[in-house]
Image (cartoon, rainbow, N blue to C red; front, side):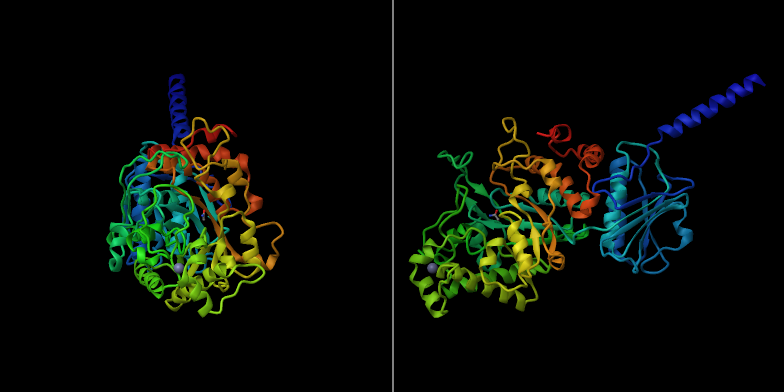
Length: 552
Ligand code: ACM
Ligand code: ZN
């Protein structure tokens, strides 16, 4: 009898210890879901016996299921097959749900991108109004998993729900100053997906290189895509003399757009105009005021040579380029830049001066005639895109450009221009240099950091930013569509450096994008970050480890 008791005790101890050691999901991820309500009752065990069900005939849900299966296998080694289930096009019948993960559309849900994850002993359901919402739920489930090979994961019974604070949640990537291969752009899209973001602002053209193939103007990429060397450091007199460049073919761009769409990320291409155009001018010097010759620039900064908007040929060029850009990028928005356009050439250019006269453009108390000429040019472009069903986004310099209220303003010279724009009725994306330029240092202790632009945007500064100014009137707040961080790449040359600049700051950004201000809590965020970093490590992504332990 005594021996039996000992054996029973032993078995109980083994079972309890094994259970305690069962790798367990933790739903407190980044960005933190709005509600995580534990449910009484048995938990669920995820194993390779489970299926991932999706409604048959729904291709987006099929793709969601495949990605979820891939993520689970990457994190835990558990292979789960996906399975189309017939009930309705949006649902899966109850019998099929038992013991499995099911992805379900709920047309009655409020928010287009919200999700609900229900875990009970009967299985896991990820529900959303749209496949995009379900995809965000999938990212939460992914992040909640323990990292490391295991035959099963204990999923505590729970209801997890959230919807994002802002509809526009973006990151920007400059592929002009440095050119990154298709694989790196896709990798960047993967980062956005993991962090619950839905917009990639892709900066494709600039003084240092034109990166998008335009069939009607092949010299743009063949000539404008290459520079003869690059300055070392912050515009030092030393140039490396190494020919540098590259561009994306239209086929590659379509592939990237598709890849992003599978992750519910819309790409917003930027063709910066009328400034930052030396790439195009080197290829087609007739588009400039002086006629050139011009060279793709091997230095950083703002160049005086910009498009000559006195020539009809320039307007035709812009429309032709945009025609092809619209073919490549199906999203509503095209970013037309508009920043940092010096007007010194226009002041001297007989054609630009003629345009000013012909259009009856006059200086006013706020603006020179040349500044208002940029307004005229921008309006032409805005109208053209609008006739084709598209809308423009531009940098906040557009506020001085007479554009109508359908132009969305991207506030970069601080948050104040964005608030001004909202007051004037424009939609706004907040991406102020301070603190959302991720090409800035992330510490004041810069001696052992990769070279960066300058500045100091720490993880905490990013976290503490509120995109909606406290004094913005309630009826104007709806104009703040969202928030984005920018990665300019003068000093960023390779994928690990991209990763280092953006991680973990994009985790902080993700919380700004999803959480209501009253739900933000920096120390709680810091406590949740290490698990996300386990995922970064699993994928061998570079990140700034010091930001986890130091407030420097
Ligand atoms: C910018 O940083 N020039 C928009
Ligand atoms: Zn001109």
